[in-house]
Length: 266
Image (cartoon, rainbow, N blue to C red; front, side):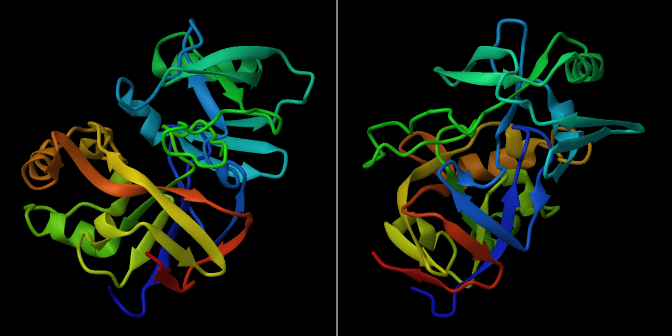
């Protein structure tokens, strides 16, 4: 176990599969980090859309405001207000879960549909939404936003450095879209963690994160660079799955800041 581990990265992704935002401080709420993946793009059948099939989503910049978002793509920008509680409600599907969401309106739908070249709508997860974490991993009925399945994803700088040592051109942590990044551990030490404390808050490791094709996408261009996935498949295939990072559950709410001390409890 490393001494002197600290929190070196904090990220949220307000619109699932769109660009992330690096923070110096963040607040834990019942969904995860406040503002993380509370917005979602869905197709005409109300099924979620992602970079897996639409790499251009990763080049949509997002700025978050008290009353909504500013979205950008190339020279085009759009300001979207958070839907009111009486906005049109839609039953949307994300990884087999059906969730009630608030529609963000026609202007946002037209903007994204034109940009992505297919009909789609932007929706928002209201404060009253109840999307439960898989009960096989959630001990206390924890909830999650539109993230793939868990409130938080943790990675470590040392593990990325170990992957980069096998690549001709190193990649940034942005490829893996974590919420929390830890400095000062040994490579892949997180595989053995079960409980940890960051600042004043405790976390349980639910399961390793199974990686899809998204890390191979350059977040700035959407271009596929398969070398990373080849290295991951060769070095991080465990029990048939390619793994990088750990999914976390959190026990309470409150603030996290860059530089917070990290301590492994179990």
